[in-house]
Image (tube, rainbow, N blue to C red; front, side, top):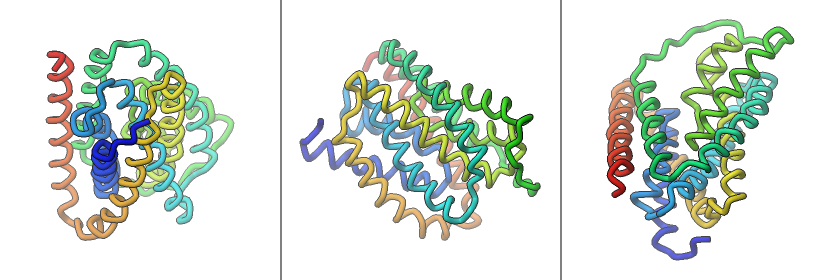
Amino acid sequence: MTTEMMPLLLAALSGGVVALLLTLFGGGGSVLAVPLLLYVVGVVDPHVAIGVAAAGVALNALTALAGHARAGRVRWPCATLFAVTGAAGAWAGSSLAKAIDGRQLLLFFAIAMAAVGVSMLRPRTVVVRPEPRLSLAMSPRVGAAGVGVGSAAGFFGIGGGFLIVPGLMASTGMSLATAQATSLLSVAAFGATTAGNYALSGWVDAGLVGAMAVGGLIGTLAGLPLARRLGSNAALGRTLFAGLILIVAAYVALRAATGA
């Protein structure tokens, strides 16, 4: 466990940046956790960076979930089925990732980052529709979507919100706003499952996780008033943020390919 002050401070700063971006733009920020841990905090092993990032994502998602749950935005039956089946997929995906060389895994991670960046550039259509109730006929679709998305989230070591939201919308018919709130249970479950799997191999540093969690709380509190002021500039900010993710993805791929 890391106890040196400088790495812990840098981890707290990284956690604050990730949480701030998540609060401002509602997704995508968690994919920056691994590059920050590797190239700012100084974590050497990519597997450790992914394990720590997964744990931090799970904690941040639980914090956000609590707020949405109090507001009554979470559809718990759909959320629970998606999260439980997806957690099984996340365990399988993370087990496969653990068996892959760290440099190769970072190349796959860079591809996932690029996919997140591209998904953020797509316009989001707000559709008002009756919110669904989980039915017996719907359950196989929700479960299958959960397994597929969970496997990808576990393999890449990301929260997977950019996949969970469309997965929930496609399998249940719920609106974008409800899917965003409902997805947080799965983000937490997939992150916790991935982190637990990595922890069994000694690839989760509790000190760094704690520092990122503290920084994340501060980042969330700082982001809330900024998010309210963003207003009409939210689309531009989201586009710039997506561009940043694509640039970092290219950097991660270059470092992984050259072994730098």
